[in-house]
Length: 332
Image 1 (cartoon, rainbow, N blue to C red):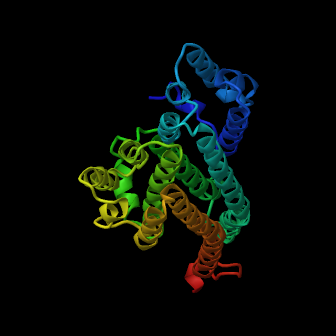
Image 2 (image 1 turned 45 degrees about the vertical axis):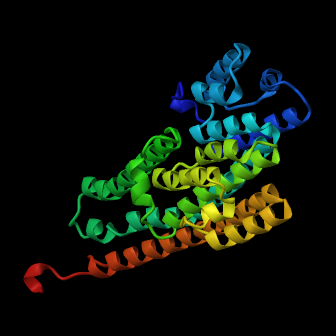
Image 3 (image 1 turned 180 degrees about the vertical axis):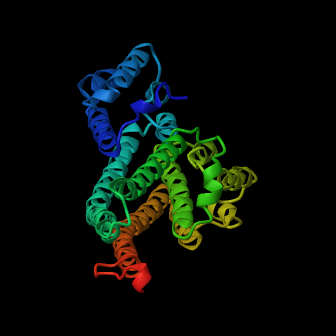
């Protein structure tokens, strides 16, 4: 378990951390020296100090990073597999690129949510004005009508962030109750499965490329899969390979997103002796699909929110007191 979940880095800081470690690893700089020149936010500096102490005490970066709270369990699992396969620099670089893309997408989504947020605030301010002007609503009632939706949205946002943080820092081998719900959601469910499958093939390709035997690489790649039912299904691949089946044949009995493309590339790689490259190519294709999906969501979610707020505002004005004068009840 991480020593402190509050020490978790944001996406941009994680990207910078792994980019720095990748550059230092390629230059042959020991990790304890590389950590001396790492820049992290002030809130994460105590975790960085714990990481440095544990590295100086002989711990490896995967275990020390998880124990210090600076790395997530997924980061630690990937790094542990990379250490076994001798491909730390490649994993550092891939994590840096992945977190950089995620940081850019998150920043784009936040900027696109500014306009719907501004329209929502204006709607909350304007919608009860006719009732206030007409004397049907007190100043206190007006302020409460404006503030309680904002407070409710802030509370939901805080709860959502907390749930995401807990899921991110949960052990990859621990059951995640939310995953069963997420996998049933349209768009998000298939995307979560694709991300897990992508991580499996990406890790397996890197480990094989580093020279690790298939039977040693498969369990390490399976450990990267966070969705428990999917990890159990993929764990059967090792048994099939032990019985003499080829990787493509063992995977053909499974059902997972992108199976057709994966099996085609793997069969080609096995026939030509370029299996690691084929696995990494497939992982790259899946990464691009996930990035395209995230970009589409970042484009359309703010637009849908904007339209929803405008419709709610129009509905409130049309069914409420309205802007025009109203006759007293005794004269209506």
